[in-house]
Length: 248
Image (cartoon, rainbow, N blue to C red; front, side, top):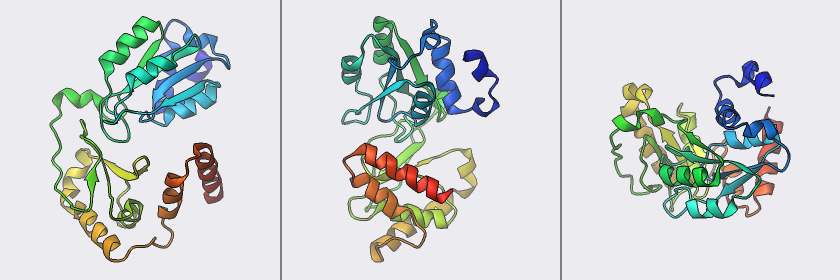
């Protein structure tokens, strides 16, 4: 299987490919894959792990993060068993730009004799050179925790943040919608330098939603809003799959 996937062009350079390679090179763990195998990841880990787990029929356990949105090492430790082949940490995490406790997770993996993959998918290799990103206050918004990298997630307790996102999308911005808490994030890169002044669109969008609440035509706010309120996450998955199938 390993040789077959190395030749699979559709996987080359993708997040799922790096997830696969990380495990396949370690002590032959992935050469013994069967339906009993499992990997344990924090809720903040990239969705590529869901794809990889489904592709290889690996049981995936997503563990809630702690109050600081960091991987809960204790909770991960309690879930490790004889079928665990991999645990994951992120530097930084995809949703909020927060770095997991990599040293603790590494020690846990080493003592448990299982694989450990550190995800650098959002520019983690520049962390030694990065400086904190300053964000000007918009009173209606809050930043989710304290991002360690240039991924900044923000939500609101007074307006529908997904309606804000729909307005930003109509202006050419493409931010990612998040849940728990409902928020959106932007990954700031050098590509944003020439248009940084244009991000005043965010402030304008907030005021628009505040003065005229309600979804815009063709927007995705109702979908994300409904999904965020559903306690049954399996139902959420089915809802989003049906939506994507109907949209394609």
